[in-house]
Length: 144
Image (cartoon, rainbow, N blue to C red; front, side, top):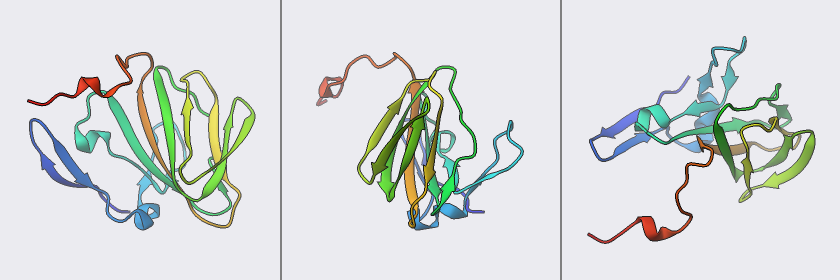
């Protein structure tokens, strides 16, 4: 099992490293409500001290599938496909995705994903509380 390396934890920023993405499969995550650990899954929000989102990465090896559907109470999720291709199953509807694809899923939707192909699927997941975004533009940033 790999570990998250916290590089900096300052008042106004945090930096962590999980190492090379090719080694993501070395991480193991055990959800308290599941009986089996998930290989290739790591959450980094706590290491980064995030206050408005959770971020995770997962490697799904060739011909693997997440073995359960799940929903969220309040969190909308965005899945960003970093490598490979796979299938997202949302409310029993199957969508093919590949590197560069992004999928937004509402909290109340049932979701899981699979990799029926012969190469690794690498996904980043960002979760945030639904309906809390104040604007979609760059105007939140400013020059000081």
